Picture 1 (cartoon, one colour):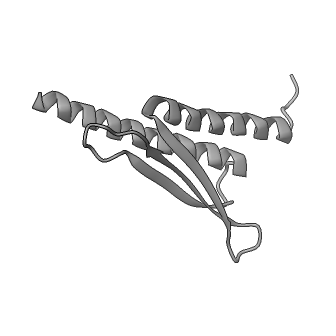
Picture 2 (cartoon, rainbow, N blue to C red; picture 1 turned 60 degrees about the horizontal axis):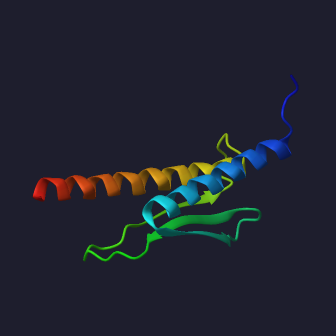
Length: 109
């Protein structure tokens, strides 16, 4: 079996990146944003992937988190892979906060 070409690898990472953000939006009624700002270093971007939970009606603050990184960063992942990794970390943060909030409600109930 042949090695996947770079385009196929990048497409796979981008699909996974999109899926992570879509999961956050769906599971937590959130809006996800991706911001890329060109730095003064040629070819390097400051990237922020964030989310804001919408429609909190029970008096609690909405879940809001972001992950920032300068890319490319010299790591082993390509740019698209690093984006996916950032979205995965963001998903983990939101999930953990939601679980902690749910556990706190269970203890106080």
